[in-house]
Length: 448
Image (cartoon, rainbow, N blue to C red; front, side, top):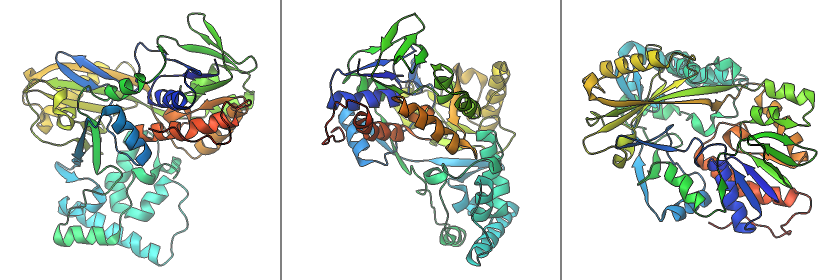
C-alpha cells in the first residue's frame, strides 16, 4: 500500500479523492467509526434529519466550489445568512460591531464611545502591535464592544482568556470594522449584514451535510470502516489496528487529532511528546431539539455572549434546509462549549428552559425528541504557543513520511472548505516530496 489514510472525515475523503485522480488504487483509507463523515455526519430520528454538529459551506476557493458542485450535480441550496446576537433581551444583527444602532441606549453609548476613542488612538499612533487576541480586540473595537460582546463571547466559546490567544486564526473569522460602517449604521441605520466570511452559504438540498461525505465516497476505492489505528511505527512504516490487523505504508496521511497521533506513534522523541501535551482544545455538546411545530423566526443561527445562557450559539437547521424536518416541524441545535462531564441531563433541562423563555418553544409538549452528541475534540485553541508547537511536530512527522492534515491533524481552526482545499493542494506536494515519488515533475492539482 503506497499511501495509507487514517480517517474518513472530510479531510481524509478529500485526500483520497485527490489521490484517486492522480494515481488510482494507490491508497487505502481506514475509518474508526461505522460510517464516513467524521464530524460531517447526519442522523435521522423520528422523521427528522440533522447534522451531529452544525455545518454549512461557504466557498473561498473557486477550485473547491467547482469540485463540490460537480459532486452534487448543482444540488446545493444557496442562502443569504441570517445571523444574530442575542444581547440584553433583543436580537442584534451580526456583526455586532456594525449594528450598534440596535443596542440599548447605555450600551450603544459605551460601544460607540469606546470605538471612536480606539480609532483616534490608532490614527495618532498610540498603539503598538497587539501581542494577543485580547489586545487586538481592545485596539480595534474599543472598550465597550470588547467588554459587552467580544470578550465574553470568545471566553464562552474557547474557554480561555483572550489574552492567552494568538492572532493567527482571526482572519477571516472575525470581521474588521471601518469607522464609516459604524457611523453609517448609527446615522442612516444602514445594515452591514453582509460583512464577514460567509454572507452567503450553501447546503446540500437533500441528505444533510453527510451527503457531501457520501458524494466523495462514491468516487473512491473501498473505505475500510471500524478500523481504529492504535499504533503507528515510524521505523517499520506500519499501522496496527484495534482488531490486531497490521498494514505497511510508504507514506501516511493522518486526520486524527494531533495529540492522539503523537500518543499512538512509536518513535516520537520525548521533547516532542511534551510539545503535544501542551496543545489545547475545546470539547462540544450539541443538543438537537426535534419539534412538532415550525420555528417562530426565520433565523439561521444566533450567538449568545451572556452567561445566563449555557450555549454559545443556537442553530436552526430546518431554516437552513426545510427538507431536514417533517412538514410542520422544526429543529433547534444548542451548542455548549466545554461541558462538565456528567451534567448532560441538567444541561438539557436548562437549555429547554432557556428555549421556552426565548420563545423558541411554546410548550414542553412541542418537543418530540432531544438528541445529544458530544465531541471530545471540537476546536483547536490557538494559544500563544500553538504555532511553534504544531510546526515542530508536523516537521518531525513529515521527515518520517507522515503528514497530519485537517482541522485536528494540522491543529488549526478551519472550515469544511479549508479542509477540502488543503487536501487538493497538499496531496500533490506530499507525493512529490516522498522518496520514490510516483509523480513526475509535472504533477498538478487534480481536476474537479
